[in-house]
Image (cartoon, rainbow, N blue to C red; front, side, top):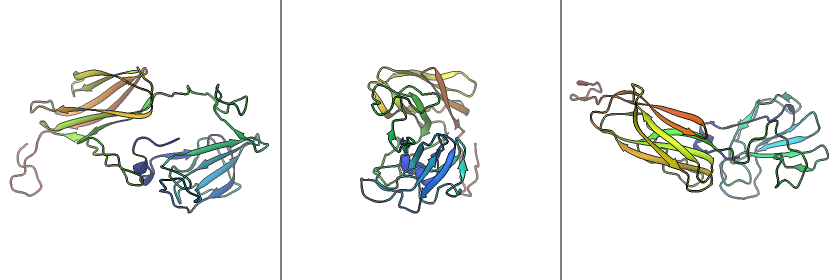
Length: 260
């Protein structure tokens, strides 16, 4: 399970965490290892291991160094409890969570029940989602398109949420499990609630992770105030708020606006 978008940035800012999938007892912890690996290697990872009431054992690996739960081996955790920050420690090509389950006989299990599961007859989800769980992970506004860097360098996001009339506005949608032919309805909503611009996007292919961006040049007469970038995708509505503020002039260089 990898972090998208901007995985290294999320690692640096502790934005993506691993939580316990089920209640259990901590039976082992591994920490202190380098957490920005970008290739397959023989180095050790940072991980938390839990034993559950039915005897199964779950692994949560590739975590960030020194981010693991403060609870000691032998302590109990509950479902949804924090275990650590997702990183790229050990044998890893980038930030992601490595999750494994073993049954009480120490046999590796596939947690997802489906036609490709030849290991065990039952799954481990309480409510198993579709194999392609199509959603939008993030909506953003930018000053320029994001510049994705090679691991382990953080991406140059170029995030911007405040614009002035006459500025260039870039809006972007970051998808997971986008399937060919799925349609998104996108719109820019003005401060008075009316639609400034609307359009549709049809996915040309199927992607594990994808992003699309659109560029607008705001006219000098554009309304100022609080705007929304809205996307309706797979019956769910997503919104990102941004602002358009009047241009402010500082003629005397004192850092204060002289004319609005």
